[in-house]
Length: 440
Image (cartoon, rainbow, N blue to C red):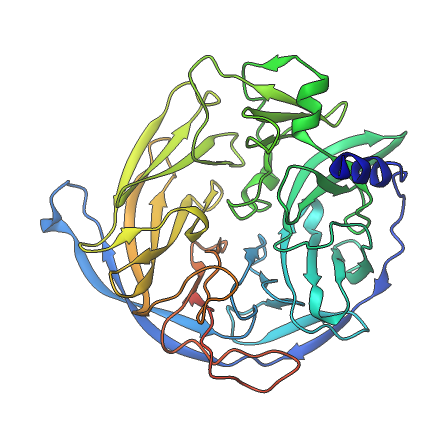
């Protein structure tokens, strides 16, 4: 009853036109950076390891662009890399050499957030900072005006941990007004009720796939995928519950009140259950600019990467293997992206090395319709035991990565060199925390 009451209250707010955002400060930021080299294995064409080659790849390591426990990165087609693992949007135009930070007027303490590229070059972001008085803050960069804005978002559940964000490109006609995209945000508890915005700043409207399925019994038999050049760049972290499919539609996994996947109807902005004739949906999905469906499944110490040209009816797949003695931990320790414009997919994994953890990144050639795993990177030293969740001494809450327009990849990782962590309320502490490794 509490959930339904909150939905009714929040859903009563009308759609907004021009968002009443305040100008944000854009300041220079100087996180610690250094150059490091990590092992890379280039796989040959044969199944035998005899034609594999190992070497060292150079990375720029940037610390303190996220928070104590996580980063959240994305990149645009101009090569700008963004991180909102903490309170502020930090970004770099030169592969981590110099940084700038987007900040509201009021100081924040220690938040966590997510962000996404939007159609037209906009950037939208949301962060939650419970330590400075429960601030849920939205940020937006409007490409047309080249301005950053922010806005307080007062409507949310009392504990809004890890607000996952996804942009769904349109256009949409909502209450007689056409908008180029909408953005969905989902915070803890992740029970399925989403907030969404039609202007990238005002999150006062609600959407719930599980409730919509109970109201509308119609079942979708085919994923409504449509090619869109923006789909290479707006992809969310694969932990996000919403995946854009193109043409105003999106895919959502089963929720608290439903066992079925859901598809967004762009005409009504309601969700319908999905039951494909080819079998159940499983794993993680992305759609690229060519309208190809990508799927990632972790299977033991391997992963299977698939591409489908017909919405999941048939697949062409490749398998990637972790190094000997390394095991996947699955769940939030895995992330992937698929960029058809670049011709590269990337898979990141925070892995179990036995007594310690480590970070592995794969590159997959997707320039053809049959994927091929071409490189495996062993990022960091793999010499620290880190875990997700409150109460852990050393935290690595989830994996995140981004593909840059020249095929390089940025990925989060943690080892004995990444730290100490930093917050605005204290100087450096002794705790280790994750950092970004940006391929050079």
